[in-house]
Amino acid sequence: MFMQQSKWIILIIVIACQLLVVLDSSIMVTAIPQIGRSLHMTATSLTWVQNAYILPFGGFLLLGARAGDIMGRRRMLSVGIGLFSLASMLAGLAPTAEFLLVSRAFQGFAAALATPAALALLSASFVEAKERARAIAMYSAVAGGGGSVGLLLGGFFTDFISWRVGMFINVPIGIALLYLIQRFIQQTGTRTGRFDLWGAIVSVIGMTALVYGFVQAADRGWGEPETWISLAAGIVLLVAFVFIESRAAEPIIPLRLFANRQRSGAYLGRFLLLCGTFSLFFFIPQYLQNVLGFSSLEAGLAFLPFTVAQFGMMYLIPGLVQRYGNRKVLIAGLLLGIMGILWMSRSVSVQAQFFPQMFILLAIIGIGVGMAIQPLTVLGLSDVDPQDNGAASGLINVAHHSGSSLGLAVLITVFEAAIGSGSSKMQFAHAISDSLLGSVVFATLALVAVWFCFVPSRQPARK
Image 1 (cartoon, rainbow, N blue to C red):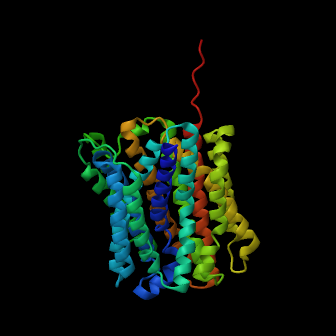
Image 2: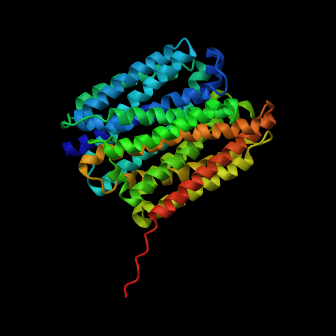
Image 3: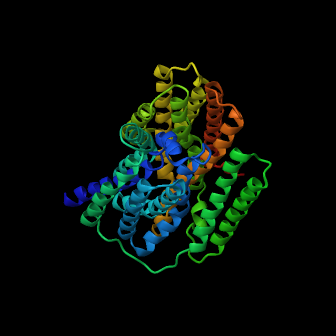
C-alpha cells in the first residue's frame, strides 16, 4: 500500500515540475504589450521573450537527459528546479530587455535539466500497462494544456499586479518542489559515461540560427544577407549535429532510436503538430487584445475552453486507446484539430464575436490536441531499451519545444508579410487569419507524417 501511495506522490511531483516549466512557455504571452512598453521592445523583438526560453529548453533537453542517466535523475531534477527558481527571480527583476532575455535563456537551460529527469522517473515508477497509460495521460494533459493555464495566470498578474509576478511566483513553488523531491523521491543510480557537449552546443546554435533567420526575414525581409546567412548556418550546423551524433561514442541522441518507424513518426508528428498549435497561444491573445479589445486577463480566460477540453480528454483517452488503439485515436485527434484551426482562421475578423463561435472552436481544438498528445507520448517511448529511456524522454520534449520555437518563427514571417506596413485592426485580423492558415499547414503535415509512419507496410505476397 505504501509503495502504491509513493508512486502517485512521485507522479504529483513530476506533474508539478512539468507544469512549472510548461507554464513559463506561455505565461509572458498575455503580458507582451506591457513588457514591450516597460522595456521598450519592438513587436518583432518581443518574439524573443518566447524564443529565448524555448530554444535553450529544447536544445539542451538531450544533454539534460544524458546528465540524468549519468549523475542520477533525482539529482538533476533538484539542480534543474533550483536553477529554474533562481533564473525566474532574475527575470522578474530584469531592468532591461537584454537582461530579461538572458534570464529567460537561463530559465530554459534549467528547465532542460529538470524535464527529462521528471519524465524518466515517471517511466521508471509506472511499469504496469494500465497504470502507466493513466500516468502518461495525466502528464500529457499538463504538457499540452499547461500553456493555456500560463496565459490565464499571466493575464491575471499583468492586469492586477505586474507581469513580473509571473516570474517571481516560480520561486516559492520551486522551493516547495525541492523539499518534496528530497522527501519522497529516492536517489536513482549513477553510471560512468561522457557528455556529448559538442553535440548539444552545435544543436542549440543551429536551431537558434535557424529561428533567428526566420525572425530576421519577418523584420527586415528575405533579401537581406543576414537572413540567408543565418538560415544557411542553421541548416549546416544541424547537418553537422547529425554527423557528430553518428560518430560520438555516447551521443545525446542515439540514432538507433529512429530505427523504429512508428517511434520516428511519433517524434516527427509531435514536432510538426507543435509547429502549428503553439503559435495559437501567441497569435490569438494578440488578436483578442488588439482587435476585439480584450484585457490581458480576458485574453487568458478566453483559452479556458481549450484548457478544460484538453484536460478533460485526460480521463477519456485511456478508454479510447484501449478500444480503438493509439493510431486511430491519434489520427482522429489530428483531423479534429486541423478542422478547428481551419474554421478559426476563417472566423477571425474585426466584427467577430468571441462567443459562441470562437469559444466552441477553441474547445474543439483542445479536444483534438488532447487526443493527439498522449498517443504521441506513448508511441515515442514504445519499445525503448532501458538504457535509452532518458534519451527517448528527452527527444519527446525536444520535438515538443523545438517545434514550438521554429513554428512560431516561421509563422511570424507569415504574419509580417500579411500585415505589411499597415496598422489597422482589419489588417491585423487579416494577418492573424493568414498565420492560422500556416498552423493548418503544419498540423496537416503532422497528419501526413503520422499516416505514412503508422500505416503497416505491405508484405510481398508469397508465391
